Length: 250
Image (cartoon, rainbow, N blue to C red; front, side, top):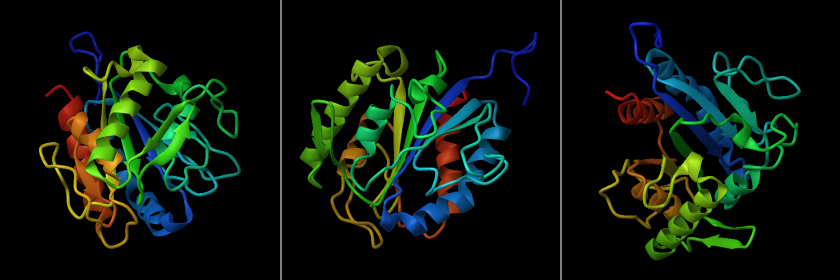
């Protein structure tokens, strides 16, 4: 869809930071993501959104197919819409890798100053976290541990949102007025809205409920989806609907 012409308003911007756990217990989930990611891409292409996806995950473990990614060769291939920041994402350290990678190079040095190189000034941000686990890691002087509890999850969310403000209030706003949403695909059993409370039960193929990620979704008015879904095509369709509804300006 052509935006920005003399009779058109500029297309609304959206930078999606997608973080995929590439630990050993994620093999099936990674395959499901690779097989269905173009459901999200196709919906974004058909929308009026000027989008880009920044994938944070190890290239040796995950590579998106065309057309979102032109090739899976020896190194990542970036485009105007897709950027791969390659680094290992363990079971519990996704939030810390977001923080540590912001201003540090990826393993192929495609982003010498960190994944911040690929963010666009003025673009709202949407994090998309995909993991079977919870949060337990340290970035700098800050330790995160959701302890698989609602209270632990809320503390993780508060601390992470403060860390994002410290990284860049221009890119991420403040904890009181964040410039992003945080969609989580974690160990919940069904789709949960921001109005639903944190749940501590775990769906069948997950390890932890991801209460820290759940709290971030609630705090940023985003949905939580089940990593145990048997239908990733519908899952990415639903995520696309959420993103387009929130960021298309309609």
